[in-house]
Length: 432
Image (cartoon, rainbow, N blue to C red):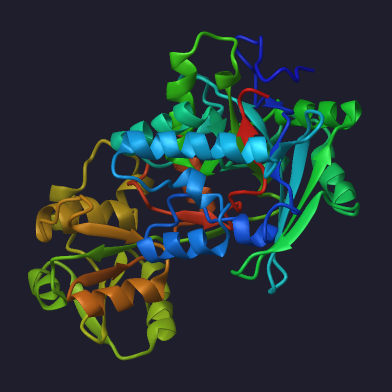
C-alpha cells in the first residue's frame, strides 16, 4: 500500500485511491464548521452569494477557492498567502497520519449519501478509468490550474460515482465498511444552512484501507461533478515529472448502486432574448402552448412532455410556454449525425444545436447565456431582466453513464448531480 502521496504504478488496472493527510479546520479557531464551508466554486456564481459566505466567517473556504482581487495573478497569490497564514496560525491543521475518509450527507427528507474521500491516481484519457460526460471550457481549466499551482493544494473534492454492483466479482466490502464506520463517533459533524447534515470519519486500519483499494481497483468511475477540476488534475500531472504528488487529485467516490444521486437539470437564462421574440421564432418549427400554472405545476407539465420527446419550458413574461414536438426535418438539418442516437435526442443537444445555434442565434458565451441550477431563481431573473428562461428536464443517470462509456460527451452543463460535497471539510495540501 502506498501512502507517500504518489504512485509508482505505471498503468493502474482500475481506480487507485490513496490515503492522504487531510488538512482540516480546527473548530476552536473558527466560528463554527458550518460557517467556514461553501458549495463548490462553480455553484457560487453570484457576487451576493460570495459576499454572504465571506461574511459568515473570516476563514470561510471561499476565500481560497474564489479569492477576490483585481487580476488573476493577484487572486491566486492572495489564496496562496491566505492558505499559508491559516496553516501557520493553526486555523487549518493536518491529520496526524494518512487516511481515507468516510463522508456522509443527510437531509431532512431522509436522503442519505455516503462515500469515500481520497487521493485518486490521475489516469490517462486512454485508460478509460474516469469517464467525463460533459465538455469543458479551456479558460476555466486554465484558471483552476493557476489556483492549484499557486496554492499547491486540492482545495475541494470533485464528485465521482461508480456502481458497486458492476465490479469484477470481488466482495463488496467497502459498503459494509462504510456502514460500520458510520456507527462510530465522527471526526466532525455539522449542519450547513441548506439543511444538510455532514459527518466525516477517518479510516486508517491497514486491512480496511486494503479492502477499499482492492474493491475500487475493479471499477471505473463517472464524473458527476467537477469536469473542469479533473481536466485541471490531468494538466498539472502532465506538467510534473512522475512520480510526484501531482499524480493524484482529491475526490469523493460514491457507489450509486447503494446511494443513488439526485440528478437535476441546469437551466439557461438568455439575457438578450425577450420571451415574445423567442416564441415568435418557433412558429412552424416547434409546438408552443401556454401553461397557466404555478412553477411546480408547470414543471410537472414539462416532465410529462419530456417523457415523449424533446421539451422545454420558457418563462420570463409572467407565464410559462411549453415547447415540444420539434419538426423532424429541422432536427435532421441541425443536429450532428455523427453521434449515437441517445446523444442526438438529448434535450441539451437539441437546445444548443437547434434552438440556440440555428433558430435563436444566441452565442454560447457568458454575455448571452447564464447557467443556473435553481429553477425559481432562473425565472425570477428572466422576469426582472426581460430575458428568457429556458427550463430543462433532468437526464437519467443511466443515460449519462452509457454515453460516457461510449466516449461521447454531452453539451456542457447538461446535468447537475447531487448532493455535492461541501467544500471546506477536508483539503489536500501537496506538501504533506
